Length: 110
Image (tube, rainbow, N blue to C red):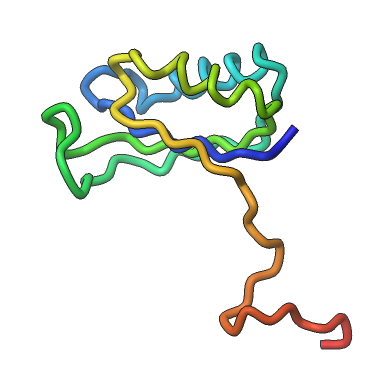
């Protein structure tokens, strides 16, 4: 299993309660596919760079999860035709634990 981050852009006119119910449904879908959820973050309503399905704003949600590699396509396919989802991207989550501006990992002595 790998760690992934799924970014959802939801249509704010098609979801209730800021998308909380949608996030719970997505968590259930991940569990059903044999994965586990590490973090769910509501990033709020934001202005998009370009219009998607005649919408200029959307609700952004980030879900960090572990999924079997074979189930990522199935996860994307579940939301491909969902009218509430304007856009979905799934990335491999490989954020470094320690980040410095000069891209140097500090010594343990520092």
